[in-house]
Image (cartoon, rainbow, N blue to C red; front, side, top):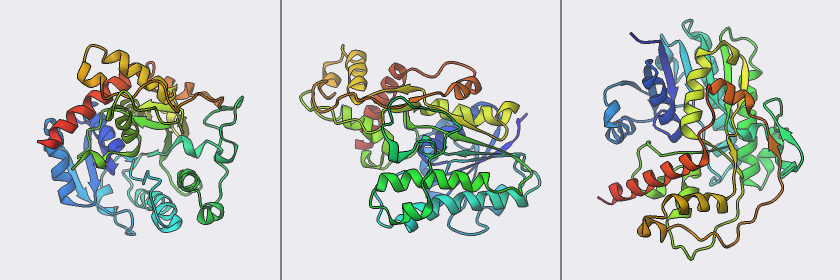
Length: 339
């Protein structure tokens, strides 16, 4: 018997895929959305174990009322659909408005559907971090902190990272500022999300931004220098996905933000982990970048994600497991896509 019907928006994306699978594995009936039937077909080709197990709906967050049909009858919503890229042209059209309006559209659709009990929103640690104070050594960020960036500042900024950070904060605020809903809300605020990608890809160039950074470390030569670290915090995608499930099951998560920095890590440390993990494989070792190079640790903020670990119900997945599993999957995908 199903434990309930959950709608996962953006179910063919990196995080969306993991969230959909986590709910399926936990015994829920899953309804997934994407923008085209082809995306559904590609997803099932990449995940044959789950073929036929998701109810697919074509839905577009840029269209008012575009999710009304998909939301009918659902008890839970996991809203994962939101852009993550620093490669965009127009701050408002390409980043700010899609993120903010997407959240508002989901909230409005949920308010019209009496069966909805709980909405879980994939936010980001960037909605917590104060971009202007980075790296802010000596300060400990918790779920109580907010990125103070305004829409006006982000709209005119020349810094794409600042704009992306602001979009996540403003999108999350749009949910909390809505006082007319009758259902519970939980927002999940992860940093860089790393993990074995299971979303459909046509080429390695289509990798999600966070995993593309890992691929860069293992897709070259051992003589290549390690690039400088920009974001020294991460979490395993499978932990993030499980937090979405736990959020609808554990009353302590109702109307709460959940911080989920699992570990602080620099690129040279990731390389050290991978070189140790694949020390017995000369062909793989030869492609992992050298530990010497540009990357240097720098003093930066601390974080307290004890709330996230408590909700998870077990310790965070270690970086050793996370990056080894991710590297193996990336090399596997590389061979599969060649074929």
